[in-house]
Length: 234
Image (cartoon, rainbow, N blue to C red; front, top):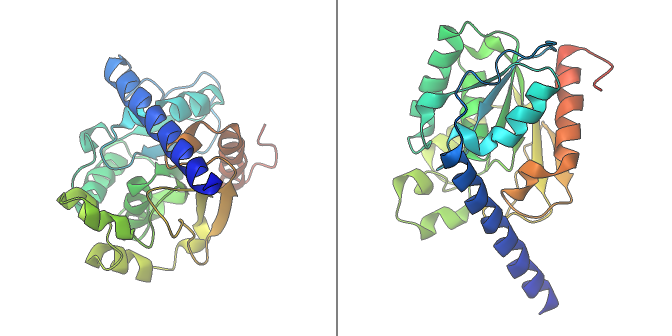
């Protein structure tokens, strides 16, 4: 029973954070260009991709921290609340890459954003613009819980969904992906481990609260430096 109660508390804290973050995003007055031009530029530039029912501002704390560290951070505002299919959202993100002429970028993604990022990496038109990706709590193998909600944008995460299975078969880029999971993810019971990728597990429980884990920020700085070939991430 103590284990069950612990999970209940973890879920409550996770959803409370998500609600606060959504509210903060709605009140934010920053623009898509706010984090693109740091004073002292550090490579690589970052492309941020949020999860389903998340606008880019849901990831704003990470965007601000990476910007303060010198990384130009680009967002894909036309994704809106990211409710469309993964292929459609990947098309929007690909247009952003080409319109802004971004090259040598690292995708930093949350949840569904990691599926969009993986789709980008597999495309012949823009895949060469992406150095790699750090994906946080991404359902690379889908989630059986998706069948509980009668929403097309959620049911697309079923393990046997054609997009999920097609992306799972796309293995050539796994060595350029860092998949970050948590010790307990209420949305992805099987976890977010991706064969062939670098898989990292955080001690923070939850699907959303990992985004404010100081360990994640340190990991991002190290991985961005590694992708850029910089031995001095700090």
